[in-house]
Length: 476
Image (tube, rainbow, N blue to C red; front, side, top):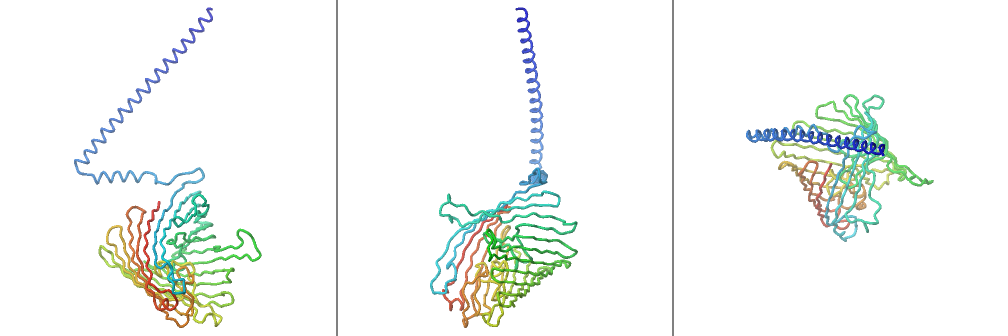
């Protein structure tokens, strides 16, 4: 009995001690919180006093500058770290464009008018840019491009998302100033007359292969090997073909505000029996308000059994005037050779513009190409207000020869050759405006009209065509 009593007393003493310790700990916590509350109250009182000082001295601008300076010291949004990468940056782009065109195209050689077309397109890109080592970078970009409402059933749609870009990049290879990029990537050279990512298109262009670029003295040097098409994927076959592009370019930048370049492209398209080399020279520059550019390209090789002999020329000149509106006027002339005798002489003389940004150079309506024809263009540009820019352009189109076809911006035939017809294809007017109303958010819209010429009238439907469009792009 005595043992039991003493055990109970011991338990009570232990419990009492624990309760006392718990009460003491809680008192310390309350005292700590009270101290922090007093500190916060003091800090609030101090900040209120400083704010009253700013307001009394009407120094709101200084206050905003202080806030901006504090924001700049904060980590950039979208940059995070990962266990196997020193930094990862997330980004992307959303773009929506609506179009209405009447008539939709001139592909018909009959007198029937192609129906009008109204549609909307959407492009969404999400990318990850990872620095996995001091000189190694990995970039991946997914893309979904679609016409709105294109699915017969949204619950049955299993296509649409693709890899737009995906590559590993190694900088300063072997201790040099060159970078090697392996995978799928966009390509752009100079003013994009021959090689362009064609960002206007809702899908755009990207190439699979190897790209090497860097600097050597006053020269920028680049080159690559790219698979254009592989018929062996996904199933090998006895007739499988691989189309590929190899190229090299050098750009001299040793002159102030001027640059000169030379490049060579070799396109092997076994599926079409094409083995073609393109040599090109490029120059561009500016001096005070004057700017200029010039391009020349020659092609040789074989197109099936035909020997290729084709060429193209382009020149621009512009001037930007002083003033708040920053008005600029410019003129442009482009020529691409055509085949005047339908290959009767054993030669193929139609210039191939490769992967050009024809949408900009040969008119927004995509009715002409740097191929079998001449384009004379005049442009006027102004910036009427902050964030605004506008452009008005006029184009005149003539075929080099009516023994060759009328080609659109993609290089495809709009109408076949018509010997004896007039070479006057028509005229185009493009009016566009661009407004940047928020950081990285741009609204771009415009109206274009094509005035059909004698060639169009003689070969089929010849109504003039109207096109109106509006595009919103948000990049993050």
